[in-house]
Amino acid sequence: MPEDISISVIAVELPDGTYRADCPDLGLSATGKNQDSALDGLKEAISKYVEGKGRAEIQLNAVKCMKIKIQVG
Image 1 (cartoon, rainbow, N blue to C red):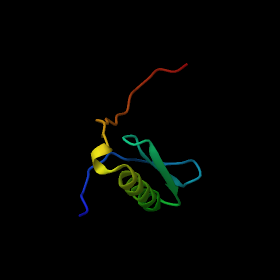
Image 2: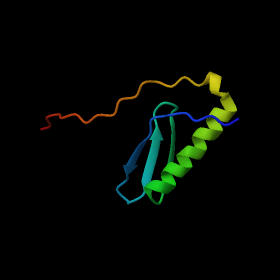
Image 3: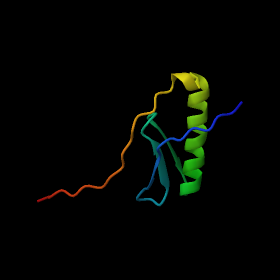
Image 4: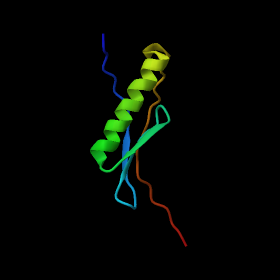
């Protein structure tokens, strides 16, 4: 029976206008022409990864996304 899991993902717009979606929990990423296609590709990659390993073998890390300020120059 399918199981829902919550997992952290990050979507980034690249300089060429395409998108990259990253899953830092599992070290997976996918790219696409737009944010939705990148996320769809990542969802598919995550599903295959979890199905291949088995849900019991997946350890999800606590992921925090934040912005920081640094001085340059």
